[in-house]
Amino acid sequence: MQTFRVLEFARYLVTGSLSVALNLLIICVLTEVFGLHYLLSISVCSVTVTLISFYLNRAWTFRKHAGAVPRDLARFVLVTVSQMVLSVILCGFAVESLGLPYPVAVAALSVVFVPLSYLVHRGWTFDLTGKASVSGRQSQ
Image (cartoon, rainbow, N blue to C red; front, side, top):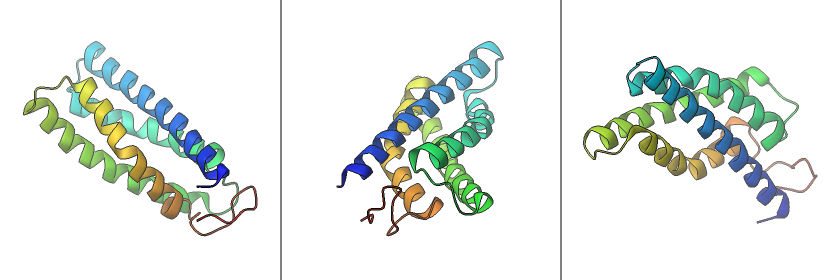
């Protein structure tokens, strides 16, 4: 793996960590302070976190400054919504059937989705597979 890809993945991990922290914060506040069901809290916080994550990933993680922002955002949202649906189903199972606390279930699922979502966002959302990177080197 070339250095720029390692750094890119490191940036993705930082962005993802910030998103997970923001997710947990919003979910816990909505659930504990405002009394919403944890699954509804997950759904509500997704809009804010998705937009923040999209712009951080586009501008900083993948350093994509050209191209169609609406297309990239639509793809990002599609991936995120698909991931959210799976997360809600799996989180509900982990909490209701396995007895995990909901913050643990949310964090664990976030960790599971990181490598897959990185590849999908790099290759499809931002259309960077096989194209030159910011540094000018060809990606693999």
